[in-house]
Length: 267
Ligand code: ZN
Picture 1 (cartoon, rainbow, N blue to C red):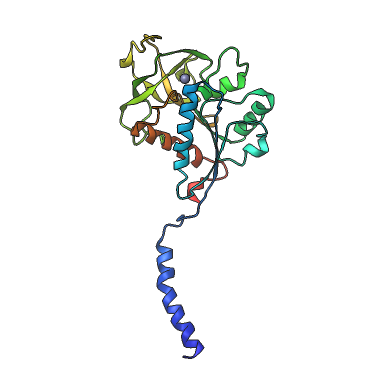
Picture 2: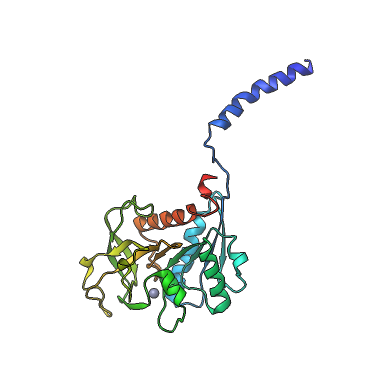
């Protein structure tokens, strides 16, 4: 067969293959799309480390298919602003930055469009923390009190048309955790959106440490930053509830999708 016919036949064979490729969504398999960093401390209280190790596995499973790169660190030493800004999102599972260099790098990262998901003890701060920026960033002031021991709790969705809550039931039961109440009123602040809170039906809440009332937000965002705080994260049962896990994935996707460099999921 002459070469020209061979080429012609090859072209005819390729046409359906090319057409099939074009039928795929435009963003098909353009991955990994972004980088995320998980930070947790191995020196935190044991129940917080238990949560963190499960959290690492939870987020690692989301990388199946290499949708994104996930780095995990147990120390923020050396994480300068230039290093942090490589990440679309930083997930802090049981601890916040310590020391002036780590704190300054994180502040610069967040003030310049960085993404943050904080759980439980990552948001803990009290009068000894001496980091006013962080307290303002969270919006809640300092820690006030908690239930004890860790318990399941009925949670109410506060904002049902938000990307983080849109596919959740109006109320659902959270797995056993210690939950923090805070000094400042989040709902009094225009730049804070409370997405989920513990239902007043839980009161009195606790066996040893009992909380008798008060507003109890557990998931919120500060609209001045690309951040979300989720207060659950104590012990080894926190990833045992599908509705809550769905919210965790929603939160991750929402933070990542608002990268100022463009939504990585649209790439
Ligand atoms: Zn705790």
